[in-house]
Amino acid sequence: MKFIEFFVMAMRSLSANKLRSSLTMLGIIIGVGAVIALMSVGRGAEAMITSTFEQMGTNLLTVMGARGATNSLTLDDAEALADANIVPSVVKVAPQSQSFGEVIAGNESITTTINGVTPDYQQVRNHTIASGRFISDKNMAERDMVAVLGSDVAQDLFGSNNPVGQQVKIAGRLFTVAGVLEAKGGGFMGRSLDDMLIIPITTFQSRLFPQRTASGEAVVQSINVQVASTELTDRAIQEIKAVLRERHRLSASDEDDFTIVSQEEIIGAVSEVTGIFTIVLGAIAGISLLVASIGIMNIMLVSVTERTREIGLRKAVGAKRRDILIQFIIEATMLSLTGGGIGIVGGWLLSSLISRLGIGGQTMQTLVSPDIIILAISVSVVIGLASGIYPAMRAARLNPIDALHYG
Image 1 (cartoon, rainbow, N blue to C red):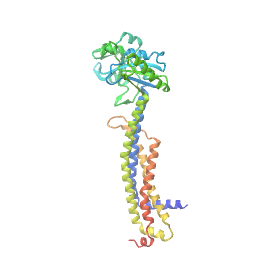
Image 2 (image 1 turned 30 degrees about the vertical axis):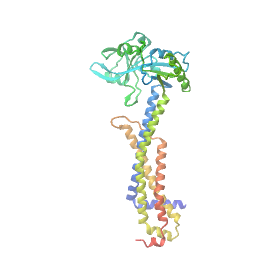
Image 3 (image 1 turned 180 degrees about the horizontal axis):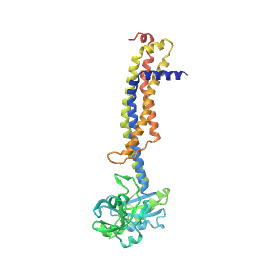
Image 4 (image 1 turned 45 degrees about the horizontal axis):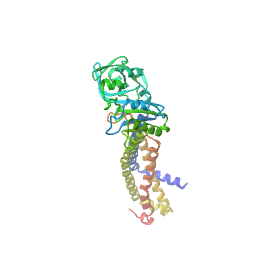
């Protein structure tokens, strides 16, 4: 019952000074709102990047040439890794070569990523055909001049028209559009997953960007390997290493002339970076909360001075030091909690606005997770307690006789 009385008294005191209470809460509102909005941007970026990598393929390993040995991987290497008798942990293997180039269709032209791949690339990289078809084994064998367009490329070059059967020009050569990929959305490093063009890797190597090893083998830039399950990733890495080291005639003392990167490693590294980014954003916003706590303490100290006679009267009629202490702490905590609550709503609205409008013309995904809300509420409570204790103790220590004669 006594706590309820303290609560009612605190409410009356704050209501009697509405303007002062509102200005005091303003710092908390801005601080909490900024924390939620900025941390939601960081969390959203992490979720967006993770989703992007998941869309690229599941249980994926990427084999690339090591630094200084960029021409170390060949089509024959990829064929060897696809042998289930030698590498039983692997389901599919899709070698890939990549370059940037201009693609022209009629009066329209764009610069996009040109990927030379095999038919298995569709499954390994989780692509779905929206219209037409993907490249075939026959296209590979005959080095056909066919192309599959990403949805962004199809839209930019052909608008609402169906590109299938139409022709595009790449490096001065005409290619027939065999199909269009279904849009994935998302992207990474400012590059859309749908901004790409696919041709047979044999056509890529023989007609557009020929590149061979010293022994005359066709070079590939990377080999996408789909593992049977996540649990077999480590085993698959060891099997791939063994096959490639033997094929590249590396002795026990030689370092690998290739690197193997798992999807989990990439996602983990990116998540670590975005996590640091989120913490930095939260720390920046936290500065405003620190300023707000100082503001609450100052206002509470002023309140103690203004209410000296009231405190003296209450102590004269029997109020204990503990009673005065609790009342002032409750007042400070209520200011923080009310400001924090309004700040949470404001931060969530700002987060939604950022998600809708983006930043600098770029679409931004934001994510207000429960732990951010809990953090904001906890910070509000801590600020209220921390900023209210000293003024409350000062009020509680007032001598009732001196307080009654104050002013």
